[in-house]
Image (cartoon, rainbow, N blue to C red):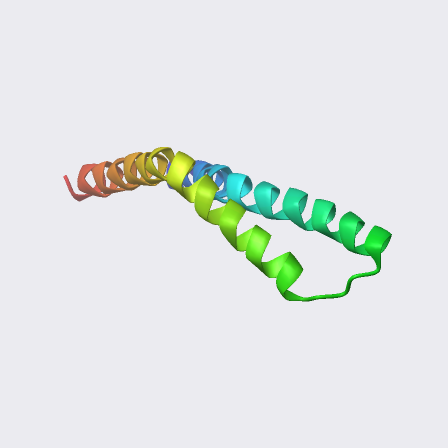
Length: 90
């Protein structure tokens, strides 16, 4: 029973880390897509590159600004997993 609780706790933590890492990129892409979509609807300009280029630029900006903290979060989680694996081997 204790192993099941530990596994469920690990899965819960994994899902939270995944959400925290993916959320900034997805929210930036969503916001830019919404703004560009409203502008395209207002001006009747239906150009596909108008949506792709700003999304790409904002995703790159988010990764530059928050990439280090995202990587640190994933690295801490990875260290925690390996520490738990080492603890099980003892």
